[in-house]
Image 1 (spheres, rainbow, N blue to C red):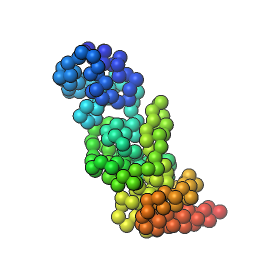
Image 2: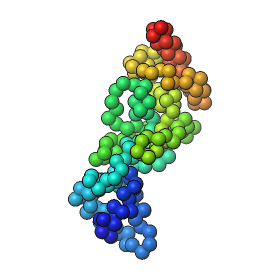
Image 3: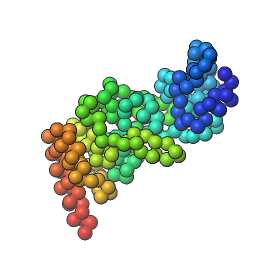
Image 4: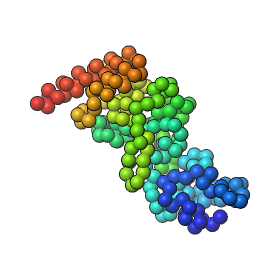
Length: 211
């Protein structure tokens, strides 16, 4: 396969897998060798085994980090600080994209950023939705309420009012407190219920402060 042919096939894809190129009578071993050569020459970025994206200037669509995260580990969704920053609920720039999965914890350092995957039990794999992240790209992202609860669930000591204040949460009107309580109840976690009560009190105090 010529590189120009590869670009024709995948130019509209933010990321692509080797399997996309293996239709027909092609030699899989030869395709993999070509992908390796193009990666070494800087024409492709390898994100993990079997997952690639075109490098500039061949790249027509720059992949959003959330899209990469979804493709690095299937059945995962972006959450915690990454989702909170996306929704404007925390002020900090978040250099690592954090996702939730029922698979083993993992971290991927790629040419396009670092990606961390945190493990939860199957019952907690909820509270996310397909989200438009721009440039005609979509990714599974936790709702604002679930992103906050995921962070609290995974972080020791995070159900204290002091920890919630240290997060420097902002734009609290974007959080639906009834949904926050519902998600905490679904999880069946006393820790999340305590954190939800503290969060509601914090939101009320912020509301009164703003008056």
